[in-house]
Amino acid sequence: MKERIINSLDDNKINIYIWDEVKNPKAIIQLVHGSCEHSLRYKEFAKKMNDNQIIVISSDHRGHGKTALLNNKPLGYFSKNNGWNIIISDLKQVNSFIKNQYMNLPIIMLGHSMGSFMARTYMIDYPNTVDAYVISGTAWHNKALLIFSKNIAHMRSKINGGKKPDNFIWKLSYKPLNKKFNSKKATGFEWLSNDSINKNEFILDPLTGQVFTSSAFKDMFYGLIYIQKKSNIKKIKKSTPILLISGKEDPVGNYGKMVLKTNKIFRQNNLNVKVNLYENQRHEILFDEKKSKVEKDIILFINGTLQNK
Image (cartoon, rainbow, N blue to C red):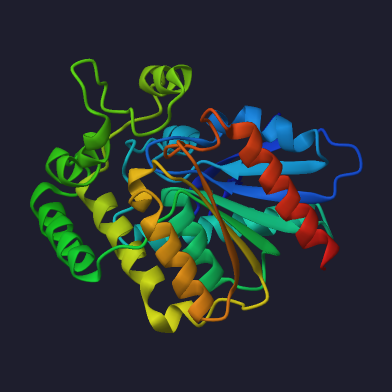
């Protein structure tokens, strides 16, 4: 594994992890991690992909992991203005870096959770820079609720300056995700996976589990509204293969229902999409008990994409 630092368009530092110890690589995964975590968590997944001739490259978002530390910014804070779009711009910078370093290799963007929403934004804004998408742990949300939530976050950001963790919005948005799994011994992170080691590592990691600031919540709600606009969905390249993957016990996607709704809407727009739902698996399917099955399905999808190019 290697680390590189590149500059964003506004001269912030972007920390990148590269797993490229691969003989005869056939493809590259540009991995887009989720909220309140960081890229290094995916090292075992990256090694599995390396064993199958696939390079993995992932950047820590603003307000996450080493990117936050390098820029001396608090965890859970994106930017003063336009945080969502700035992170999408950062992903484009990483994509350009990949293309310069590994010419002619197909790029598959894998976005998980909040990263799935970022990948869905990216496929709207930069439709010709990625060859396929794996969208993990995604959802479809109520439009009115998103607009209301964004307005609340914007108001609270104005009041508190936007850089403080917003426990009020967190309790309304993230805390309910554990409702089905609560017990006297619950940690609040049972919704992530069935795997106790994974949950404990998440709890103990100082770079995971942070509460978003008001402005970051505002930015994320903006992104969720953006990706569901009919006019934006029409901008997605229809021939680009898209694989939706999710656990059937994932509350983010309402236990598969909102993943299937996303699939339905994509199909109605003639997108090249298919969906895999995994029984008894929760949100972090790349870390859950059936992760080997998920990895195999991702490899099969990539191989199929390469054969059809």
